Length: 147
Image 1 (cartoon, helix red, strand yellow):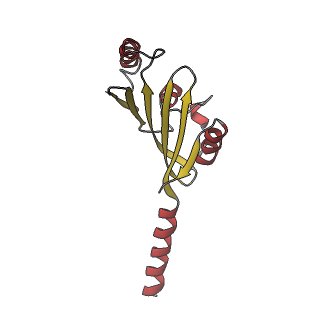
Image 2 (image 1 turned 180 degrees about the vertical axis):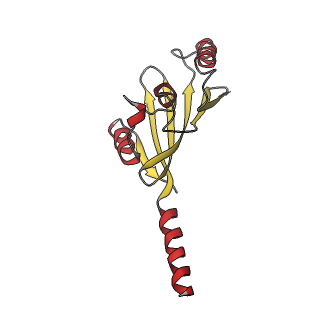
Image 3 (image 1 turned 135 degrees about the vertical axis):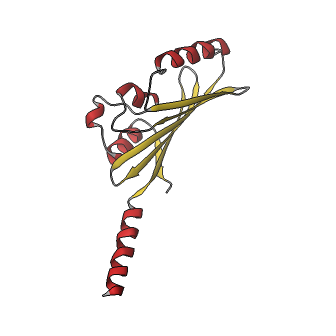
């Protein structure tokens, strides 16, 4: 009996941990200016728990350091009261890197989700992991499970 209970517990732990992980979706845009975007979707089952994005925007004639200063000011103003979005901006010689995270996918506003690269018509009924991955791949992202 003791072995059966231990076996059942090990089975449950193995099943629950196999259903968790992270999917990374990446894309490179070069329309008006060059942006490399990576979105990490932490999940349990088909439910997304947390979203983090890293955007590297390269300086050029279409995105200057003056434009970056305006962007930084606009972001600070727009997201000053945000409770579920955190972000940081690092200025490098050739680019800026914006790292952002939505702390609660299901409570975040459409604006907060959009900031990390999730486009939804209605955040309350947002898609699960499989749907989000498919939407991203249809939009040109390459996605892979990393954990």
